[in-house]
Image 1 (cartoon, rainbow, N blue to C red):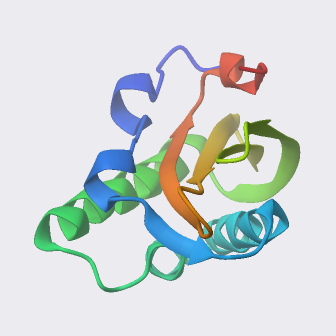
Image 2 (cartoon, one colour):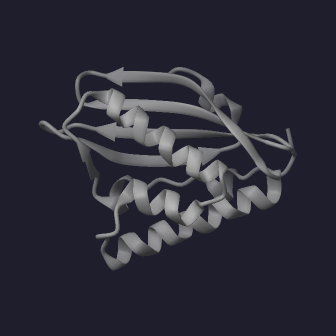
Amino acid sequence: MRNWKLAGLAVVVLAVGLGARSVHKEPTGDCRARAEAFLKDVVAGDINGAYDRLLGLNLSKEEKDSVETLKIKTRTAVNVYGKALGTDFIREQRYGGSITRLVYVMKYDKSALIWELYFYKPQSEWRLANVKFNDDLNLLAEK
């Protein structure tokens, strides 16, 4: 693993800024499909499109600023770690009936990034609540 960590640079949390974007009324399998489509787009290099499709386009000014920062940090990771080669699904953890955590490894030429996507279901719809990535392999642990 590289000595230079993206910890301070690329840990990104969108929960508050995005106000829990609506996903669908489907079970968490739909959350996984959305997460995997997003990560596939990132691997393909379509970072702007990946975030726009995952989060939607009807964002407030504050939300747009947060997403733009996230896009920049994602592009920085590509510059640091090299070309994205693919992803591995690690686990899905459910916390009661209202929180789901999806964990993936995105493989790069030089190292790996751990991606966590959290979905929240307050009533009947699953919503994206949080996206973060980091090169800290401890994120692979069950929480």
